[in-house]
Length: 273
Image (cartoon, rainbow, N blue to C red):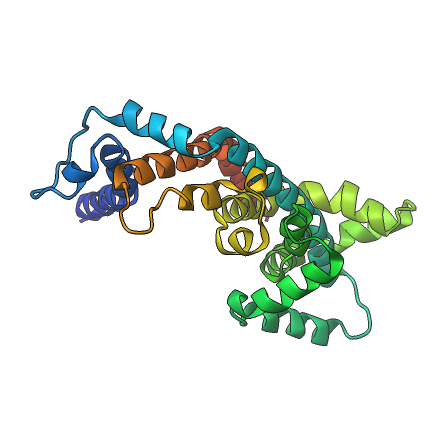
């Protein structure tokens, strides 16, 4: 019976792995094919010989490296600011009492229920009033804190940061910021690892807001630049897919680079809790 359960468990894990990895494999295969081969039936499941040609056409049609650097700058800036402000607010909600705390948190949760598209027009008007349309500030400043991150850190800190440890810090003369920086942040590392990865990927893949707010091609992010590869009447899908592959590769490298640290942080958090 135990062997059967183990077999079913491993079988389920293998199936889940195949389902998760197949879209990336398919993206790689299609990026090596021509548009005609992409439309062919039956579909071709093995690699073609046009990867270099497709990538060359991407680089000739858009300023890929400029857009890459723009996206990297924006994504890193948003991630750093979100980690700081969301952890600060989440820690405050979790471990401090202040007037209106309950209602402010309810209001925070309510903002998570509103579709992001509803804020596009008001946000654009505000950015126009500030004179930030077409600048990176319009991408970074509105995204420097979010309700999900505050909620996530608050939930984690409430159980993981011992109140007794904070009391001991107060006895030793720690103020609010030292309690946050020196005592709480090391404990919050697993939560911050997830929030950082989640925020960076979201900022890297963001398309709609940069498309609306940016009007200078030299400041286009990667997703906006790649969208220009689509023609009005005819789309060269082999080139578009190759561009998509180039945009995905940095995220895969980032995941491989931080995965070991990410898993160790989660394990450390589980042991501490």
